[in-house]
Length: 171
Image 1: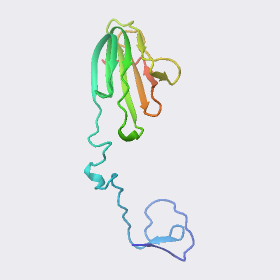
Image 2 (image 1 turned 60 degrees about the vertical axis):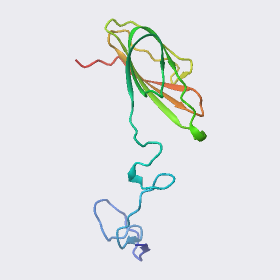
Image 3 (image 1 turned 30 degrees about the horizontal axis):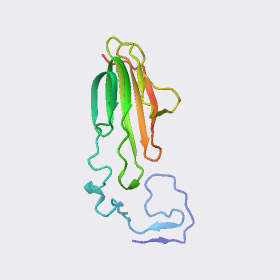
Image 4 (image 1 turned 135 degrees about the vertical axis):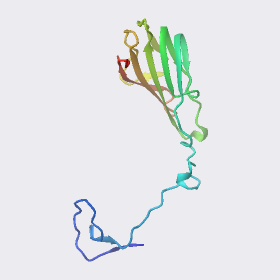
């Protein structure tokens, strides 16, 4: 049903249910339903046909590490690394997006000291740290750091964000 202009002056809306009263000189005779936009290429929006987010979930990998370790965002996008010795983290660049559509990827990394603590962590040179300092867990036993790494195809490197450290592990 089309919306028609009325001769009534504009009436400010103060909230609440106020059917049939003109707002800014407009009044809808019947409720107007707007269809949701479907995914590119057609199809109903509620049928899970979005080619980017269909079946989306995060995959997690937990590992005990010492020495060099490579994180592959194609295998998982959440990593829990428990350090049992000094470690260096390498990052595999994600595969190029098909068609050059410039996609972004995010990987979350939880790095935790083992029961002994005191292990050092170094990161790949492909990471540019947001605050200029590479994130590492505090030296206390079982302390951990949360890191978010983001990749945008047009940048060509990972950007690291230190999300917090020295979190207490619940008993």
